[in-house]
Image (cartoon, rainbow, N blue to C red; front, side):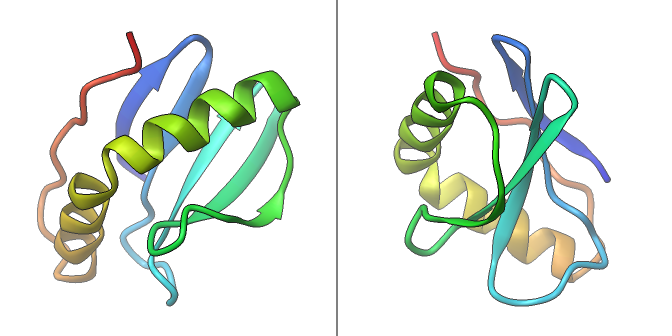
Length: 86
């Protein structure tokens, strides 16, 4: 699963062989969360609230780029890095 961004201990990636709906995975401190790209909502899992708020804010700001990467992943093409939270 290619990593598309890392910031403040959060690693974000999209799996090439994943299923619908469009989503991304994020890990922090050994925990994982899966977030819908379309509505920026948690589908499964959990990470600490502070990191989750940062992650969801970052995802809302980069929603178009996340969807572009999802579409590339579906086609099994190379994904691009997305700018981290500053």
